[in-house]
Amino acid sequence: MTDTTTGPGNKQRRSKAMRPLKLLVAALAIAAVIKELRMPKDQRSWHGVVAGFVPYDFRMPTIDKIKSVNWNPDGAIIVNRAFGVGWTINAGAVVAKVRAMAAAR
Image (cartoon, rainbow, N blue to C red):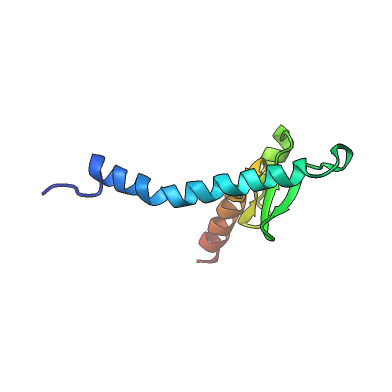
């Protein structure tokens, strides 16, 4: 029996399916940069919201910021990215939820 979930054909289909999402993310990033560049230089914060609800942060992240975004057991599961446009998964919160569910059994 042949495994149909792997192979070059399936990888090409996945890559093709991701194109619209990649284009959307690129467009949002460009829109965020344009939004910042239209502001006077002394008012640019390089973080905020674009398209009314998508967060962006182009400030150089510190190690502490990366840790607090990606590993915060007390935080939400879906959080704003430490750098870039959109959201990411807080692995610390996921692990905390799984541990809590396992302990409840």
